[in-house]
Image (tube, rainbow, N blue to C red; front, side):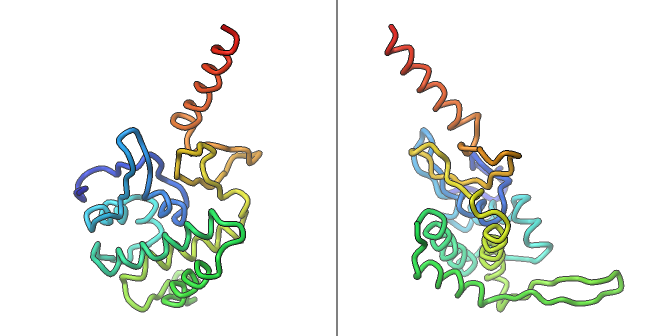
Length: 190
């Protein structure tokens, strides 16, 4: 079980919040991993820069209800991102999560401000990830992609200028694909 003091073990971090939540599961040479398999892993995820920025100072406890809500929205996001067309059940689940929060606009001493309000703090990370997914869909939905490596389960949001990114990381899956093509060419010519 990961401990909150340990560094984030995931191979791909720094993606938008919804994608970052999807990437709490990954596969490497040691097998399948799920950062959210325990409250300790949840604490690591909550402390990551992407999540801390998205939660904007909201105090969230790494407990059972928070974990349950996150797993619920992660399953819905998984079904929405990878299915064509997305299932009604996944869409309904995402809408149910979104119903637990709202944005409230206020005018403070420094000007306009938008504040997120949720029914309970255990909903905040799940609500924020669901809302971020809507933002990505509204911005450039075609840029939200799975890694082109069929053995990889990671996703990314392509921010490259021409929008042609294929791999979760060039250092990992991209290099493996290049090496495979190289050995295949070499084997067929020699």
